[in-house]
Length: 135
Image (cartoon, rainbow, N blue to C red; front, top):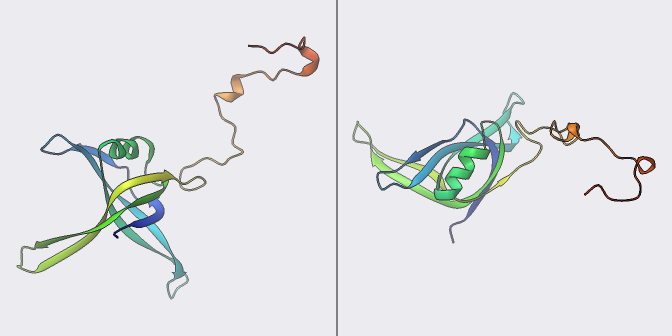
């Protein structure tokens, strides 16, 4: 079975593209923190390249800007090629099958921040109402 799940933050805004066959896709990179620190006490992160297709790609492009927390579930795949010097090269990445939002990370607002849309509503106190619901 080939399944991988990572949680991290997007390193840049994903761009939705269209393949030669007309399929939508986007490539993005997720920074995943390691639990250990380096010799200087600094955080260490791995940068994982991911690719999503179709509706998942459109969802990521629309709702996951740079810095947004994301959990990616998919399969690990290798890409092999020969570089300009004739050397065999291999890169690894995730083909995304499913994503989830990660609250409280990156650009997410804190839970106690007031929502501007909600601030326009007036609170109805029991003493002001006649016992009927306002709808």
